[in-house]
Length: 275
Length: 274
Image (cartoon, rainbow over all chains, first blue to last red):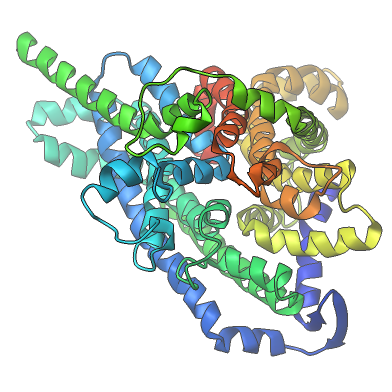
């Protein structure tokens, strides 16, 4: 137990400590109160990264949610060979993010990628060399990849949730002559609410902190168009060696997450009896 | 009516299969690339049929990727064992005993799991640089342990809660010590949960990139980090990249087939009971 607390606390405390210090090029020097935070919050790059993460999360998560739900409903209605299909759908989710990145680099690589040549180039969708070098589409491409990776998982999670629903209310609804839409809106959704809530929260957080895929595909570029907060923190640390400010960013994001988690946890616990 | 529902079933199956194929196409394409000779790799238009070759494997082995593979396996297994040893009692106590500020502590642990890995890697990097754990096997295993531990405790707690308390209470009445109860009753009952959760931990360690990239180095280089070795002066050796990618998929496939029910439970942190 103590170990558990220690291992999760020590890095955090050290990050807080660093965030209050002038720490550049690996040397921790003066204690400078909130200067790192001020610099951070007034810098354009920080808000840019927040914007990138915002766009990413706000497109990817809802799309995954809806597609996943639709898929789950279809699966739940009954499909031949479901027991073969289901494990296959886990593959994208369980793959290493770095391999996902490479995979899509292969699919969409400049001139020879199977998709970039056969679809994008043929229909002239993106001019120039590679979609990842396009200022307009690089972020969308990353969103697309995230959707590819996580929709199947959402689908299976919702499917598991649907399977676990009690049958009683459905029989009652059928007796009452409720329509399919009514059953879905009044019965399925409320019954699934805790699950939707938890999955939504987890996906939101995971999408917000995405790093590996962006790192291997665009490194935040072109320019800073795909520079997520994780990537920004990485660059601050290992390219500019501005460890103090990077730590401030880390702590800031951490606090946001902690606040979000706490609030959601309590709401979920009280209202929905999730967890 | 019967007729209609079987048409519906057929349609749904067709739709599902088409979706699955779309989802899996990139993966299958990568698997096919493993056997693709270099001369058709970059062909425009895309060449769909070719004589398979094993040349890509030869190069990968020549570059010492077997070592990286062993490193990856060893790191995954070692860090997971650590997690199981420390995490199992912790998860049990979270599920059973009343502790002061348990909820807050628990939330904090959860939040540390939620923090972007980059936030964690910075302090790790600086601490490791000071104590000389950079580029060591132990250092990287400890780092993996940190990020898997909170996950493990969280998920295993949900398994613990499924156990009947009565059994343990009865054993206590019989005069067993808490340690005995844990060893003889809880542990055997939890075995499935422990196996499922620890396998997921292994996969996370196996898939991990950032920590390995920052805290590892030439002497400890797991598979994902070794891929840049294939980016040569003559360009990226994509066929070989595909080989490494496919190799890294093997444990994932095994897990997917063996543990499918538990994956959802694990990845929703215990919210869905599989």
